[in-house]
Image (cartoon, rainbow, N blue to C red; front, top):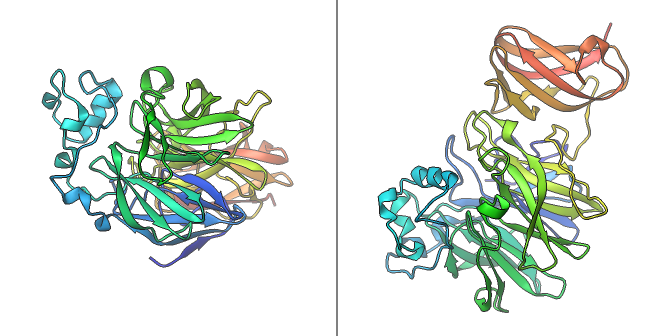
Length: 439
């Protein structure tokens, strides 16, 4: 893939055919990089490749060429490879959320008799493609960049580059099993590693960045039972407080919320503190969220994804500003169309795929907004510099669009920032719309 660019900072931040979910954002040398999975199929999670997105100003984004190829990882096809402990995920008594995941992986629950331990299961035997690359993370140490990754067979590894965007080479397997690694470099140079699903582990890495200081292992550092933890560990530090960010199941029984827990130590104990953002209304099939928080040029942001296409995949990178309170807590924010860019101005075209919330069967299809009778979609925000305004829309289908601005009919809209709610009376494909001064 050639290098691709986008330029306005609005959500989703990358071109519509580039789908990077599970975003881990890091700042290296005054540039922000996002490491994530790469969705390419219409209905499937992830792929055999990674691409790194980057920006210098939160407006202009660049997506690089392939940074790692799953087919270059040697161990998934080695059936004699060592099996590592995959974290105590509760195989003997799976939670309702976990039971659904196991069914989706086609792992028969009959394989889970009393006393079985995860390292006795070859997860690769249950996945059709063992070379899929799941969510990664990256850190820098002594001028080198270490990409930590996991694969669809629940193995984890590390690859290295001299550049933050890669390509990453010389993959080495890590002494653990599971998914969704996170890596964190503390102020004193110590490096910590986190991994797992439903119940996560944490450990300090040795200086080789590969082996574990086994005396420091903390099992169940966060759990579904206590923290609503699902997967997707991410660690940050601010003002002496460690923030463990992760997808949470507390609100809806599925991991659509990005939550956080805090501690005075990188290895806990961690206390659940709340939710940062919820993507449940990004698509009728919304199932998961995964992301991170990062400070860039004095502003903190949350990086997350939204699925699209009326399915759980096709996940697109999105960004919102976040704000901390004096006590270190984080205010929950809404999904927006604006993202880190400007609100949409009078006369500016708003593509259908910029809708940030959908309900009643509406969904995003490519660059269009698909609406059904009675469905609704939200665009957040538009800047009405002057009123009254009218709307023009480029649509296909039969039906009408009704419009409200901040809960009022469009004709009664006031000047300033407006949340736009569209409601359809029929089946419509919305290509774009714009607001214009009323004649």
